[in-house]
Image (cartoon, rainbow, N blue to C red; front, side, top):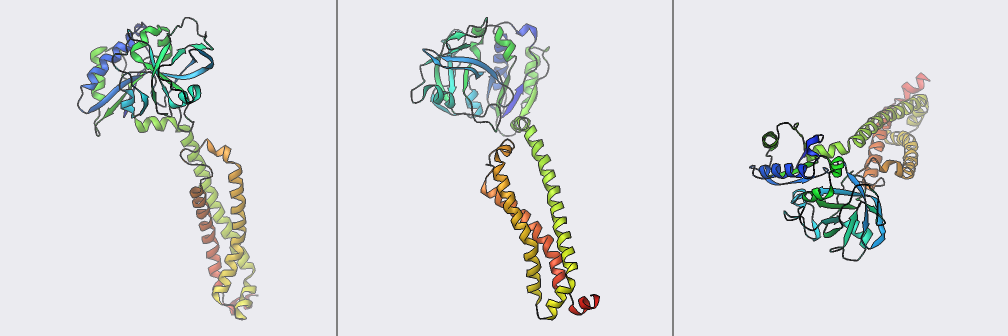
Length: 361
């Protein structure tokens, strides 16, 4: 999937319906381009901004909210984004400015405001709170709900899905020019077949339709996702670097302490060997004494990690802060590093010559 983001809206496109007419003509050309499976217009690209407006369910003043996500989309948007239609239908070419104003809601919206009731056929009033107009000079007609789509993470990957209402881009003229200030030129989503690049065809089509428009920004799905998690990725990389440094310092510290302890106990180890202690027993003794503080530290670290899960949640996606596999892997790495750092001086201790050790004493 490729996303096409347009720049600032030129003044001449502020007139009612001008933006959608341009996008409609552009989409007609793009859909005839070889390699394009489907394409659709949207007021805001996924994970790249949103438009929040108040909303009231008609006939239920208590079912209202001041900031519901609102996206204006063209026909084929859900097909292009592979978003399943749970109930009802998708928008079609017939949902234009002369047709009945309609809307599609997501599953979270349906659960919150309708519960077990079927939302299809119900009406919502965008721009009102408790049935009262909230935005001056904005009078959107009541819209009939014609479909329910599956939940998607429209803003951030880590946040749970919120209520979203979708309306047809072609019905924008009925909303007035005021909406152009909020929505702007919007963007397009294009699904291609294979690794086909349609950027040159889109640029050529824009030049043919209006050469005054600046070239749009082209983004792959991975780029869109990467932008949305840029801060989290930076924080994770930074924490990873600090964690790596801490791991190296831990290994150096354990090695230094155990090596110093072995050196201080050289005569004792020599006496033990002279009295019959074999190499394996000496090796086990040093390893046991060196690893005991490590095991205690791992237990304390595990308790602290569980206690700090709320701080870690914002840095994670797709994995729980208390995920047992992740915790076991981290503890395994730390224990392995500590074991190697302990085993090296322990191995030297096991090879102590008692005669040399006692002479040195």
